[in-house]
Image 1 (cartoon, helix red, strand yellow):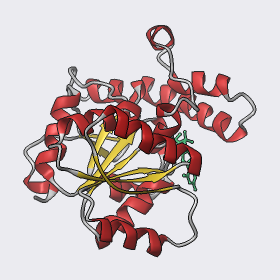
Image 2 (cartoon, protein in one colour):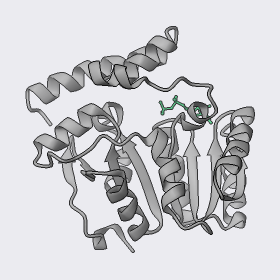
Image 3 (cartoon, rainbow, N blue to C red):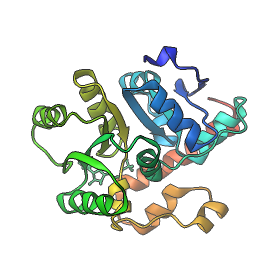
Length: 240
Ligand code: UDP
């Protein structure tokens, strides 16, 4: 089923079409109903990214609010029930939601992380993993062939953003399946990254800052935090 046949509303924020899902179930139901395509988490960084190719990928697929700013913007555009849906856990909900015979391929993270991820998943779920690979590879073609030969229905792609969105889009056009971008979720799942505590989210509503403080010297991450101030300014002044 193509996106245009899917019976869901979308809301435009910063020229990106976002699905204002009010629950994880509603989102996963739409993903299941839509069939092959990309599932993209959007927060400040992706919303403010002006790359037309990234925008096109977001707008041709299902994008959901994975950040408080995105959620507030969507709520102010007439969808007060929209929820912030944490992508770092949604992929586990997807495994629970999809039929048990679904075939999964996992791509991303360092070798030891992906290997531990697969072991842990097999212990926790009755899951049909048809292939997996670290996110540090030389040939995209080789990875694509492996995915194609595996016959995967769902491909989890954890390469960080926006790299993973471009990779998923290229793969999708050559091998249509459900692709979900996961960022650093495998690191979180295997305990390499710390989850953001609930109390922090209740008080600050700024997950990125918590991750930043846990990874203080990472300059690339600091740059990302400053985007949040720009986002707050644009939301307050209604420029979105
Ligand atoms: N990664 C990868 N290949 C790459 C670059 C990154 O597999 O070429 C992995 C990296 O090991 C980490 C994830 O992608 O597991 C990125 O995590 P991060 O939290 O930075 O992603 P975000 O969700 O913030 O985009």
